[in-house]
Image 1 (tube, rainbow, N blue to C red):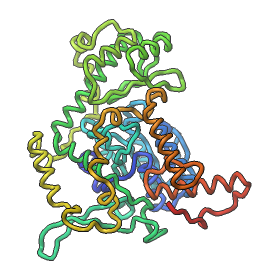
Image 2 (cartoon, rainbow, N blue to C red):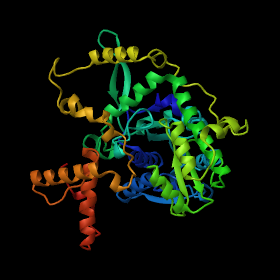
Image 3 (cartoon, rainbow, N blue to C red):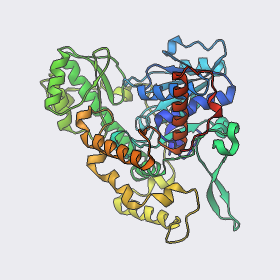
Length: 469
C-alpha cells in the first residue's frame, strides 16, 4: 500500500512515528555516503525538526535548517536533505529542481509527506525522492492526543539494505508453498552493533494494520474520494476567507491554510472560542486551519463565521467557478494508478471486510494454539481489552496540540501514572518520552550525557554507558 501511494520501490513494516522516521532517514543518508552534514527544510513540521536535531546531537551529525533556495550541495559534503510535501504551512511546492541539484552532487533526498494527500497529489517517487516517510494516522487511526501512530518508511530499490525497521520477504516453505517471513535481520544494535540499520526494532503493528485495513476497505477510488472531499472543503473555505477580506499565504494547498487576517486577530480568536474551534497561531501573527475527513458543512459554516464571512459554505460553493479547481488544475495532480492489487478491490462492504479479517486471524498464532515465542512482546502482552480504549472518543479524538485546559483528563492520567511508576521503581521522577525500549535507551543516554555536561565533564564519551530499559 505504502509503495503504491508514495511511488517508491520498497517499504518496511512501519516505524514508531513521523519524527523518528525522519531521524532514521538522516542516519540512512549517512550510512550510504558517510557524509556528516544534513539539510532540513525549515518548513518541515516543528516536532519533526526537533526529533531530527535531538538524534543528530548524539550521532555526530550537523543539521542545518535552510530554505531550498539556500541549500548549497556543490561542496559534496551533504549526506541528505529533508523536506515536507505539503509543508507545515500547507504549501505545495515543486521540488524537482532541489532533487536534481542534490542528486548531481551525491546527496540523497528524503520527503516527509501525507498518504491522504498523495491520493490526488503527484507522489515523491515520481519526482526522484530516494526516501518517503510520514505518519499513517490519516488512514483511520485516531489522533489519541498525539499517538502512537505508525510511521511509514519507503525507499528506492538500491537503498533497501540500509533501511531501518522490519522487512517482510516472500519465500517458499518445505512444501513449496509461498509464505511470508521477516527478512534483513541486521536491524538491531545488540545483534550487529555498528553494522545495524537502526537500534529500533519496534513496528507499530496494531496501528500499521489499522491503516492497511483502511486502505483495503476503501480501495483507491474510496481514498481518492475522501481526499477530494477534504481538498474541496478547503477550497470552499479558502474562497470564503478571500471574500471576507483575508489573505492566504499560499496559492496551492491540500488541506491546510495559512491566513493573514484582514481584521483584528483577537476578534477571530474570540469567535473561535465561542464555537469551540482551535486554530494554529503562528509566531508572525498569522493563523492556520487544517481540515480532515470529518469536516462537515456545519464545520465550514462555523469557520467562515468566525473569520467574519457573511456567506454560508453552500453559497460560496455554488458561486465558485471552474478556475478554483485547486490541485486538479495543476501539474501536481496525480495521474498514476495505485492500489490495483486484488486485495484493495474486493472488500468494500462491512460484511466482507470483517470476514476477510477473520480469515487472516485464523492464520495467526495465539495462546489457544501454542505458547508464544519469547520476544513477541505485542502478542504476549497486549490483550484485546487493553486495545479497546482506541475506540473511545474521550481518548481517541483529542488533538495533540490542544491547550492543556482542554486535556485535563489526559493530564490526570499522566500524573497518576507517574506517581505509580515512581512508587514501583523507587525513583523520584520518570520520563514519558520513550516510545519503545530502544527509545528508552536513547533517552537514558541523553539524560546521562546532560548530567555529565552539567557537571562540566563534556569530554566523556556516551559510548561507555550501559542503560537498562
